[in-house]
Image (cartoon, rainbow, N blue to C red; front, side):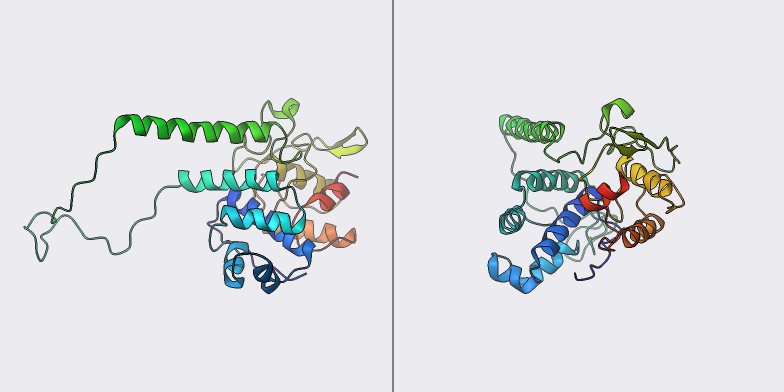
Length: 262
């Protein structure tokens, strides 16, 4: 398996979760980037950018990789939709070299800027329809998650936290207690019942707390139970994988979850 580069530190955790899942599929398929390019409509350099978090993964690339690897296409597309929503909600980046508006311009009056063409007004009914459409997409994604399309991953134990253990109620910088005990034949720490969700650097939430607690229970101390998947947690996960004969990539996936639950 090729050694993946660490994802950019500024990458949103939801985007990172999608990329990590696509990396896992690519590794399981045994296909090189060149082979992916030959079997899909995307170039080798495009796949390199997508799988290293340098460029958002388009909808079509997710579909083609899922079909090529025989994976659950619906689950991956839900992950993609969540990542798209995260990008839409992010504040716009400042425009490099934007002109100052406090002074005069070479071809305009002092104290202002040369006015550009007035924006075309959008009729109010069209705005209302657009907002209604976007609200419908958001509701559909929430329903898809709640119905378990992420196969036990994104939402966690309702009894433990009242809502989803992935994000709801989670607070950064808090060290959570581990109440690790065996229940229904598997180890649980009381923060999540996940067995499938993919966790890697920059992942956050109660799923990460669960992993940290289980690693500590098995004798591989991640040094914290704060729900932030940092280098200490990844190093502990890598040591655990090596001890259990797993692929030592530090990424917690279904096989690592299965060993942690034992």
